[in-house]
Image (cartoon, rainbow, N blue to C red):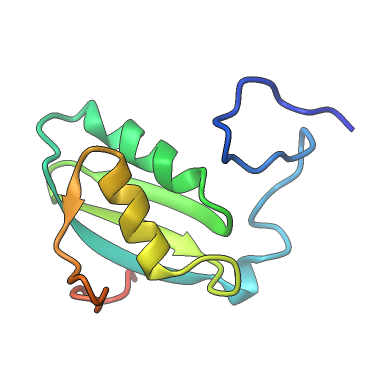
Length: 108
């Protein structure tokens, strides 16, 4: 097994060539968060890096112009609350309520 070096401390470790989506796409859930505080396009990789490091996140794509981030995740491994916390940890914010009620429609 080959381990990819220099991963964030919370990142999942995969063998080279292993595809996170290959066996888990069937139980994946898409969700979209409105994000405030993306002051420039350079914020988008930071947000996606924080989200991608969360267990159970299969895909994350930030849209600077739209002010949103689309995430595909496994609900048995993480939750929308954890995803909102990762967005906040990236230095931006989301207008999820403290009770973490979803405010946007699921991603399509």
